[in-house]
Image (cartoon, rainbow, N blue to C red; front, side):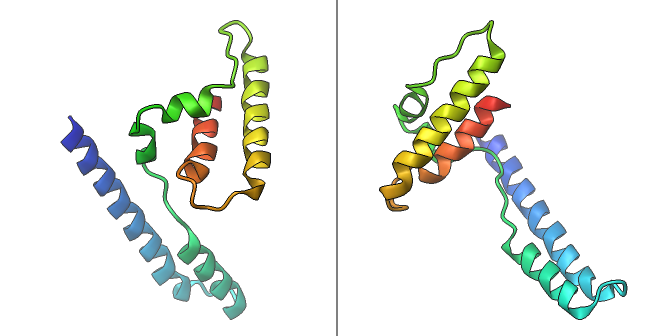
Amino acid sequence: MHQSITFTVLQAEEMFKEIKSQFIDGLEEQTWMDYATRAQARLKLQKMTDLIGFPTVIKKPGILDRIYDDIQVDQHHHFQNTLNVYQAGYKSEINGLDKTQDDELDDSDRYLMIILII
């Protein structure tokens, strides 16, 4: 099962790269765009990144507990749950203002908060 998931993620990454490459290559054929617009579109495509699967950091013991520890969830109060998630996300961002990007949770923290809302 694990090998199948890894293979699927690799396929999705390759598909993303191919689609992105085709869009970049096709920009020159777009006559309705002027040069500056095509340059901006190319730059935007080049900066586009993919998020496929889940961050591997969540496999580390205790990471998810650390992220969700302060969030109260009640099965009968979906709206309040959403507010609690947003509040925890804002607190996390505020607490992270004085930290460097070296913390292993910086990128994954925001990603996981979004997952919980969905």
